Image (cartoon, rainbow, N blue to C red):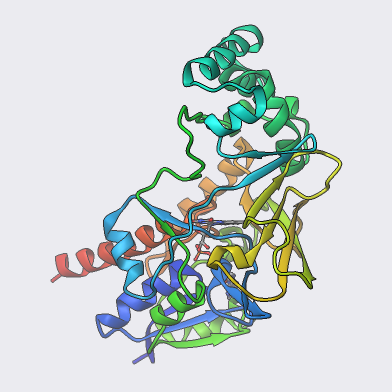
Length: 373
Ligand code: FDA
């Protein structure tokens, strides 16, 4: 008899939710992570009494009552509303594109005036079948919004000219004809009081965990411990890259401590212009309305990815999708191994989607076992 029912590779949200649910059902779980901490990319590191979002700014939002109730079992959420600013061509603007932005850009005061400007620019600069990101954006929102907020930011983000990027990267560019700076449209939003570690600690309470353990460094010993494996690492790595390497975009974070209480007056400020090599500055204390005497900011630099770096955003082109499909087919043949989460599924997921996907996975297993009697 093996010691564990499940070996869970990866202590991110997917693995932690899975472990929590299975533990409730009296299944024994061991969660390992190669990093020296639990939580995966939602992990917060405390410095100067401030929770630093170590792997990028994380704002929880969802429209799903069930997921909202689920996370509220583990933490109390504050009333943070994400309202980023954008520094573009030397001026600060509100985001997302709304009546405040249009007033700052054109001085338009009514929805009718703003809409007229956008419609006129779309008619003048748009095309019927956009062939690249630039044409797509011009066709959706016109020249001013594109040039002020999108062109340079996107070029920094992807390290490519907008005219060399595919149109599908931007499917929609929502514009709001109300004075509303709330970035998300979801009904529920906030930051867990005490940071995301509070949720992870709650999920993994009573679960065996080991950090600093790489699955591939002692794969056979680890697999021998459990009847089943839940794998949330990179799918190509699992199959030893036999169909090729999946590509990602990476990020580099530079933290600065400032001996002042308030650096930029907002948690998120985008830096649109090319003269800044970073795309945004995060001032973490504002996620939790912090009153500390010092502040810590993080400059976020988009980077090319290679093996030694953190994989952040999958690059969804035909090549990668084709390779992913082959790994996916291979993974479906392995009955005792479950592949889940953003790296094993090679797709971008928000936190609420990852939680829903992990809960669905548990449900599917339970359905299968009860069908089998
Ligand atoms: P995650 O990456 O968290 O966990 C996988 C774990 O597996 C990692 O800890 C890794 O170390 C471990 N692992 C991998 N290989 C291993 C091996 N061989 N051995 C042992 N361990 C191994 N969402 C949202 O809702 N609001 C937001 O504001 C943001 N913001 C945001 C910013 C940025 C920059 C990014 C990239 C993403 C977001 N997200 C987000 C998305 C959010 O980060 C994401 O949904 C979850 O963190 C994904 O959780 P997973 O468990 O799938 O992966």
